[in-house]
Image 1 (cartoon, one colour):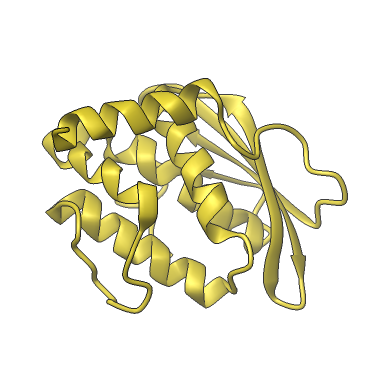
Image 2: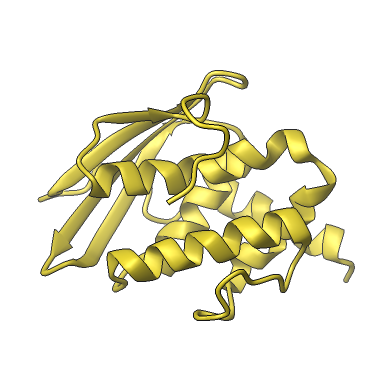
Length: 157
C-alpha cells in the first residue's frame, strides 16, 4: 500500500469514526480553535490532574483533516505531561514540513498514525488544518478561551 493510500485510509477512518468526540464530563480546561481561512471550528476539552492529561475530547465542525488530526492526537496524548505534548507537537509539525519520520526533538520517536499526515507536505495550504487541534489543546491547557490559526504565523507551543 502506498503512503498516499495509507494516508487516505487513516484520515477517512478517523473522520468517519472520530475517537474522543463529544463532551467531556468533569473537564478542567477547554478552548475553542478557529481557522478563518477554511472555517474549521474545534472545541477541545481536557481533564488535567497533577500536570498529566487524564482525558480529552473534541467537538465542532471541521474538514476531514482537522477531524482526523484531533482524533489521532486525542488517542496519542492521554497520559502525557505538558512538556511531552509540546515535544510531540514539535515532532508532528516537523513531520508535516519535512515528511514522515522527521523529528525535531527525537525524544518521543514514533508518532504512530499521526505520521500518515506527513503526506500533507504536498499540500501546504492544509497544514493549518492539521495544526489547529494541537494549538487548541495547548490553548486549553494554558486556560486561553480561544485561539485562531491567524493570530500567529504558525501555531506553535
